[in-house]
Length: 151
Image 1: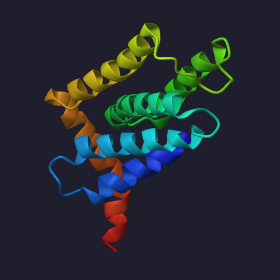
Image 2 (image 1 turned 60 degrees about the horizontal axis):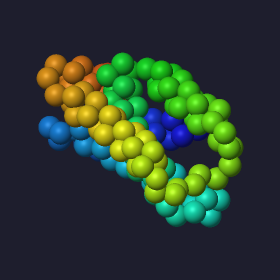
Image 3 (image 1 turned 90 degrees about the horizontal axis):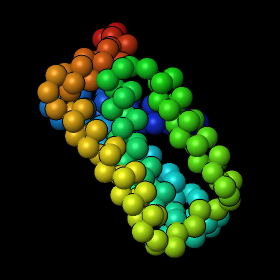
């Protein structure tokens, strides 16, 4: 469900920013922000500190998922990747319980890696020829909407 929500947000943003030269990076960033903020829904079920950690890492991985989607044009791929991330979390001991945050070195290390790696991949993806591929896929995604507006 989250990936379908993201797909719709991405299409709306691509369309709204269709005349902006930074259409793809802005779309990826804003859609990832929405994706991260959706995880605030877990506050109440879990405490604030683990919720903030989850929102932050969801934002970062949202950058990666959106870049992968716009680069490949395959929503099923990001859905599968998201499934495996959630599956690996639930495989952990107490993975089906509310998140905790004690501020240990290990927790900080995981938090930093889970943010830095996707952000670096996003920055790499929006440079060079990769951004051109994403722009071409964005144009292809929007093509039916633009043709519909011609009539």
